[in-house]
Length: 231
Image 1: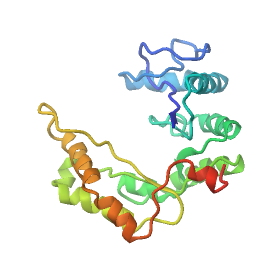
Image 2: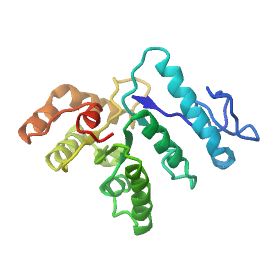
Image 3: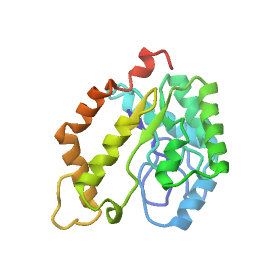
Image 4: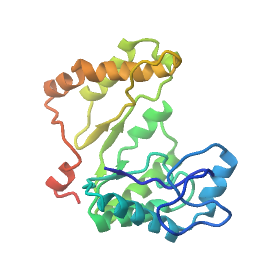
């Protein structure tokens, strides 16, 4: 897959495309440090520059023999949460390149991430974003699952394990992605890093695969969108 990296903070990263937003703001592929400059960057960027950067990144990857099977935006700059309509440019890009986009259709994802029922205005905004993708024929995830809790709430491995096993047990119809940030232990990174260690342990245990088998859930790749004719 390809993560579409549109710079959301001021730093020394350089865009792959030639276009820049004014005031040093604009587009690039790295992160940095200051929230005030972060907001200024997103407001300064122009949509035509965003699209040029997406094409530049796609061409850079493809020219090196990588077959891109989907697109996502890890920092959410292209999801509309910054008040800009960059998600339209992302959808147009995906439609032209026949790529599914990593954005969930169910509002349940939002409620889980904020650990309460999502406000109506947020649900409405998500519906607008989903509709924009569907009108362009872009394949979207039906659901996206990731544990949002801190270690203060998780406490131990069994709690995290139960969260993800319950997610598999209650998986909705369609294509669901479960994502984690697994990692090996690091001596000088206790605390929240432990969550990543627990996630690695869970993935290595085989428990998720067994739960999927028990619930007749098929493990798929992003190519399923093409197989199902969703892009």
